[in-house]
Length: 412
Image 1 (cartoon, rainbow, N blue to C red):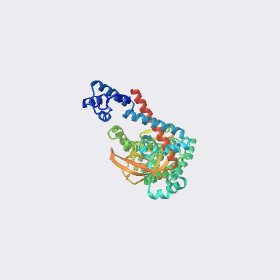
Image 2 (cartoon, one colour):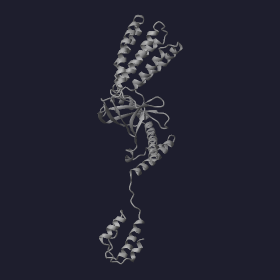
Image 3 (cartoon, rainbow, N blue to C red):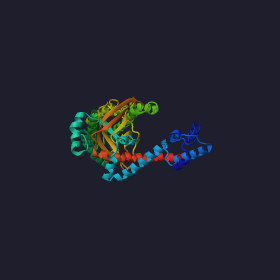
Image 4 (cartoon, rainbow, N blue to C red):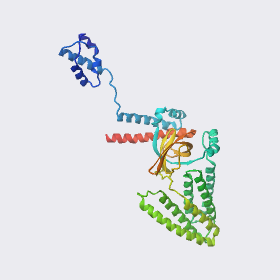
């Protein structure tokens, strides 16, 4: 140890060659600074004493740690597992929920994930937001449903009673009506703005009138009606392919869809014209409904990345504690727009629960690959979102880090 240095004469000095050798033996040691008080020359035998004493003195001090990529990964894994462990316990523990919310600004940049979740959104005007949405939030700290969405829900609630009547009579038209009913609901939810919502609500109202008429026994025109409805179903399916298929990767499907739509157009026009002779009111409504379907443009509708276990479409998003980023074909979005977002979060990993919130567009990039990259900031933040987002992100971080850890250790 250092006391051995006392045996060295006061006028000891190590030449530059010795210093260089010491630096090679101990890479972390800066020999000149450690030995700066040794002034006189020594014999070769004394050099060994100095070297031994210096090595012993350095060995008693902790060497600086070099942080490798693996060290950083292990630290992140440990942190993620710890967060996720607390997140599981926080579901019914308000104190732990508050603890998970306490993230410093430096931690927040890492507290985000790329995820696949059910997610729908629509551009909302400032007038609608201030008149309908903000007052409800100021009272309840949550956002309620807008008037148009409530109206759509009321329309959809009327259908089941007519479907039951058709089930009693074993109507063959029922299965096609149920399919179109679900597809119209799906299209309304994916409307990109209030104008599109109004359009699909009008189509739904017309379809409800048609369903009411068809819920009554119509033995005379039953065959023609079933043919027309089956053609409507095929038309919507092929329009989705036509508008969303990749022109290169799905060239064959695209060509087949276009050919099918031409055939459907001719067949349906003929059958509706025949129906007009026996039932002009129904024929006119079906003709009008067909015109609505013809005008539907799905080219800007974003394709889902998958489907959840409970049948919900999954979309790829970048999710954080304060906002959400995603890519879209809707190129009319601009910075400053206000988006109403219905974000589905999973606290336990078993099911997705919806949360309504509003996000201001703070970043727009592109288009790249025919898509814009959009980033939103959620403010004000609903209480339910605050509670669920921390738990959801922590749980997903745990799962992703555990997967990476398994790959890492399997490779070793």
